[in-house]
Image 1 (spheres, helix red, strand yellow):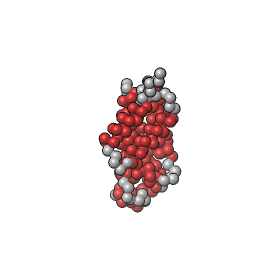
Image 2 (cartoon, helix red, strand yellow):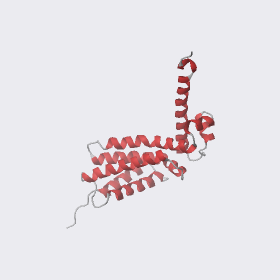
Image 3 (tube, helix red, strand yellow):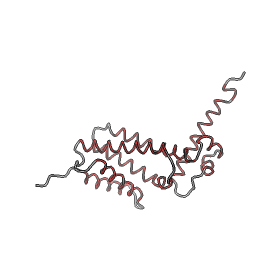
Image 4 (cartoon, helix red, strand yellow):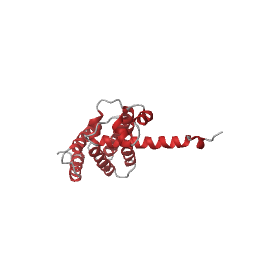
Length: 195
């Protein structure tokens, strides 16, 4: 009677884990690029595996894209959650916005390419990211760092939309991002009461 190692079961499991990683990384790279079509064939070629392996591992292209995008969002969500425990609410919000803008600058093409795909894991990650952003804004507001005359949801939309626009700008750069942050955070500071 053969043992699992003699029958090749652990080897197949190791190969499956490696192939899943290769396929996810290839998909993430393709999503970030502008020119290539996102097809099972292109993904499998980039990953160096067969198309059947891609389908067997993920079931469908949509499920693969969903897993890849959700995987890309996870570090940003973790960073936002960690920022909530930082002692300075303004610096926590600023640091998170810097990372969010860097992420959007690197991945805005991805959002354009997702179209109308049904992506439940991605939707859950986006909701988690939105929640973290709202928590950081609320904390900054509660600590008097940002104005209270604007609704938290309005501030979140304002930040999200402007950040997205800056990320997509043809002149996107570190200095543009820093200027954006200075202007948006200055504009969100509590306003002095008029006499």
